[in-house]
Image (tube, rainbow, N blue to C red):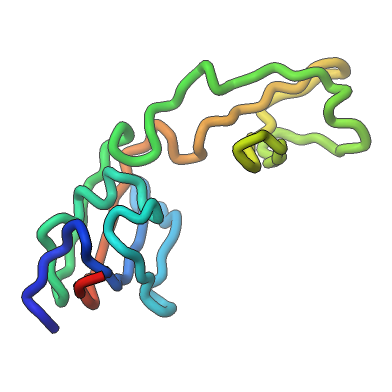
Length: 144
């Protein structure tokens, strides 16, 4: 272990868990190998990285991430009503995640509602608008 603190230009290895405020577990790697990334490489939303600033190897923390620092606020503008004809030969049900090819890559959306001629799709991140608990156990902090 070194005394290096998490910050720009650091390679970080850590175990993490992401939970909702009610304790519901969303994701965790505590039972598997730790994750490694370089601070600022885009692997974590900026709000998660900023919450890690200053932590050192061997430290354990439980950090609260507000929606605007995590996956953003739920945006009603990201809910689109599309023609049912775009979903030919698909069995639709609320909660089904569908992907659309966009010039910038794949865009996932969740079916919210549908009728014979329209489908309502929510393109917000599933964790948008949620306050999250980000539990971390820092294993290593090194120069990148």
